[in-house]
Image (cartoon, rainbow, N blue to C red):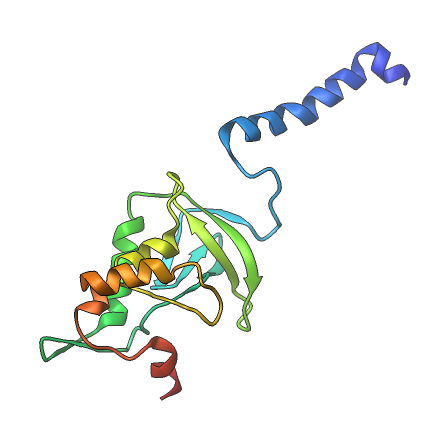
Amino acid sequence: MGDLHSGKGARDMKAIWVPILFCMICGHPLATTAADLSGVPRVIDGDTLEIQDQRVRLHGIDTPEARQTCTRDGVEWLCGQEASKALREYLQDKPPIYCEQIDTDRYRRIVAKCFTQSGEDIGEWMVRNGWALAYRRYSTDYIEAETNAKNAGRGIWAGEFAEPWNWRRR
């Protein structure tokens, strides 16, 4: 109690509340888990990033694998590599990004929703642009975006492909 009257307690309270108020005003999450990350991402593939030496699997989406091919107008093309390229180009001028952990997968990767500085959901962008499928086994978040991409014939929806989860089973 003596510290409060001497001014030290008030300084301590100010040191606690100023960052909290800043976060509230700026819209930054007040509480993050130890695994929530922000930083400049390195694209591993269409649904996996690396941030600060941590692998991050984008929640609720699945993209064609790097060696997976799709067919468009009777011609095979490396759609998995194109999905990775699309993500790389999209993120090129957007760092840093912020990821909120949802889970950890069997490969010990962080499973997270990741966002650009403007707040755009990166997984949703991949699905909306036809480079990823809504991974219904784990989430229903991106079904509408997938339907829109499919109806517009964007990305892999411009041709024929095996769902990534079925392609991996082969």
